[in-house]
Image (cartoon, rainbow, N blue to C red; front, side, top):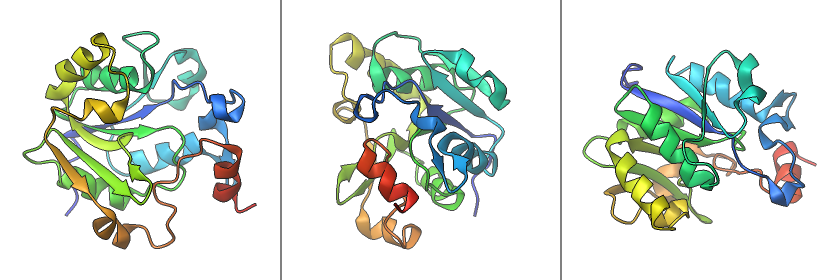
Length: 198
């Protein structure tokens, strides 16, 4: 069963500094002939028309054909991007994606949305830990996220404290991740080499 596409949004967070990659625009990195952003937008469009990009500089993404939102709280990092996504979404749920995940699939993301009933967040966890920037959040969590930012707690993972979280562990991930690449984030040159098979 696929989730009702009117009940959730997909928000791609594209405001990071990519300091471990020399400041390059991670969303523009190419994997198998397409940029990571193009790959993520294609997946998102299989799921819903409610798509937005959150960015510090919205002019970079005006040609994508989707709504672009400027960070509501400047300098708050990924948690600020999450807050902006929740505060500006027109739906009750937001599927949040970091802009550096080339291998997420529409079937996996749809399945995660289906797990969101009755909780504040659905977060996958693999052998490297939680991936809170590939998660489903209820928009009513926005005030909690803002309070964390204002209190100086700006790590996304720490903001999950105080929310009811459905944890998607490795055993549940396994059917969706046959090659172990599903949740790969391109944060470093080594990650990019792994993503491109170099």
